[in-house]
Image 1 (cartoon, rainbow, N blue to C red):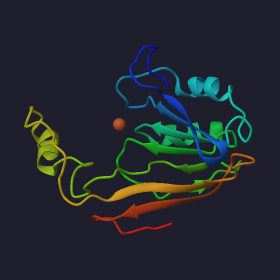
Image 2: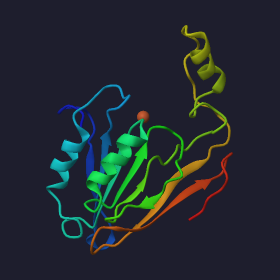
Image 3: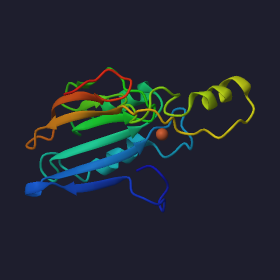
Image 4: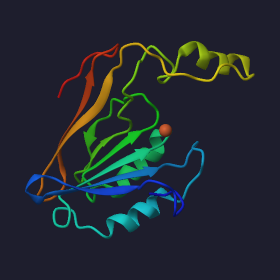
Length: 182
Ligand SMILES: [Fe+2]
């Protein structure tokens, strides 16, 4: 949502479900320790959700907040608590243990985690990633680790009438992480 106008792709999308129910799906980029630094994600999101009425024009609003720091992710979620169905963080590749429904009804987890091989450095072959940290000179280009993947995510249930979340459960299947089924 907060890339410059004219950037390929789209930052938000309304998907129509069976029975005409609609979900607004949003991807917005955080700024702390992120490259490139983009427009203010808070202001851009305010502008977008002002065009919708949760439970009326759309039955749910899901925001993927893509960023490095848990502080920026939590602050963002609290600002939109009760006005969107869910804020789930991505980018760190590591699932966090803080799935919760915020006081005004927004489902939240700081990071969903990656779908990938966890015998790695955030999904990349560990030897190549360790070289970058220890040698400080260019090495081989990073490449994905190719062991069995763990599928990570969250299962969120929302109330169509209010758009608020009624549950959020972490999901982890396969690979090295302990299985977690909703
Ligand atoms: Fe990323």
